[in-house]
Length: 243
Image 1 (tube, one colour):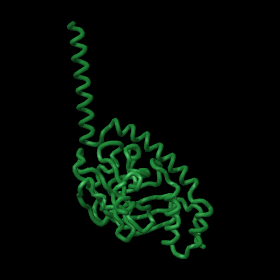
Image 2 (image 1 turned 135 degrees about the vertical axis):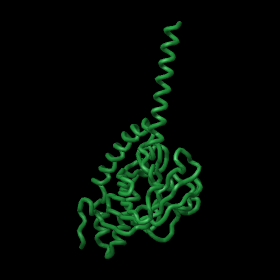
Image 3 (image 1 turned 90 degrees about the horizontal axis):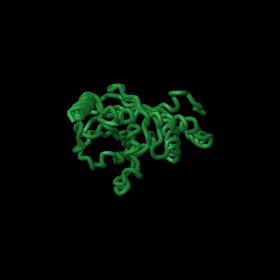
């Protein structure tokens, strides 16, 4: 009996220490167990992004884009065609924020499974409130607002430091059809159900959102950034030539 109690007490103490370490790591950095799973899922997103990059754009889409006489028209043709190709949970590009040392694959969708892979693009399918209001969440180059959500403490916590992003900082989106540079304009703290922040405001921008404060979903922290530069296929110089 004493031996059993001793073993039980050791097991309980060990379990308690594991919980304390997990809590400590979460407070100091991010939740470790979900981050391991998130790393595996991010790898899957990387693979699906590579496949998409190999396949997009088709020759037909590329020729239609080449026939346009302005870069804004070319990129819109590419973005519209890209929208038709992507699927929920798929890697669709990379988001790079030098100011917070973030470089990670962006996925399509903000459902639970998609956000376990990385920051996700708001879509009508996963955000029905947008559809009800007649708003959507665009892709870079479509002349509207692209909403992107990410975790702050779990599944790699890509937006943990979202509150450290400052006005004037650059946010880069590397898409299969081009690179897009956005300059941060402002930040806001809003209600968690306020989807109006990703409404169309008449120009190309992105809005990053994450739970606020840390370890709570009581609010949303939002960063707003306006498109300031476009470079079609600049990263790999793939197949793009001016006519």
